[in-house]
Length: 319
Ligand code: DP6
Image 1 (cartoon, helix red, strand yellow):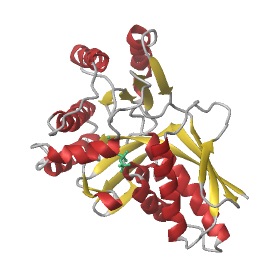
Image 2 (tube, rainbow, N blue to C red; image 1 turned 90 degrees about the vertical axis):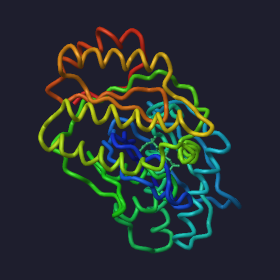
Image 3 (cartoon, helix red, strand yellow; image 1 turned 135 degrees about the vertical axis):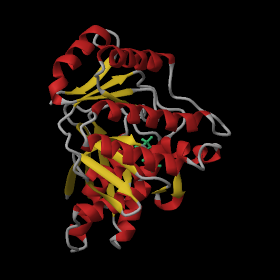
């Protein structure tokens, strides 16, 4: 029998970076994300008579050609083992997966792929063990154990993850135009799990939970008061704060390339000139995410035409 699930990626505006408890992916600070419904992972699990679990690529029309490294496969299948153990099930599975976007370049493929695996496997395991189907909250909590940011992909359009767990939150803005300026499709040399470890050696880490909580409070208040310009400034400070942790770790590392800087400069210059523009953020990778409100569609088109269309690969969703 086969079970199939799809899950979206998400982009954090307040970043999960640094873990209080690494074995369960418990973050040191709260995070807030916007769900990217256009960037999805797809997972199929099939029960198998083999003596171990096995991963292969799922062939779906429109899927991005990719292969999962041995370490990536092991991590994915280890999460399946965790779920099997949770359901007390000993049989094995073939797991097939794919994304409709390039992975390994800071596009949060672990969020969507672990969320999709958790959904597909929970369905399979509930059926095979005659257990009740799990609700969204239960699946999100299990998914977090595999990859922290994946727990936010169970909620849309916004997810807040703090010490009380993860849940939907009403922000007053949704249906953004999302444009990801792809600077590089290359695999990251430092995975985000490794980044979570290294940032703890930065002298700036001790005060990071306070700064992140403050940014969260300021951003929620900016959204509440429809102060878009302040929201932009907080998002800008927040991703720089995370990248500063990378740069000041004992073994420093960097994702912001010259091309990333060029794009950031273009967006900043637009903001300075017009007093308006998109929200901007970057994950643990060189790519730049822009979020425009639906009523900024003309500006989004103009900026795309003037600066990005001919020079970069774009992943985009128009509302
Ligand atoms: C920079 O969820 O990929 O994207 O829990 O080790 O799987 P693990 O880490 P992961 O970390 C994501 C970090 C980030 C910021 C964010 O999404 O909040």
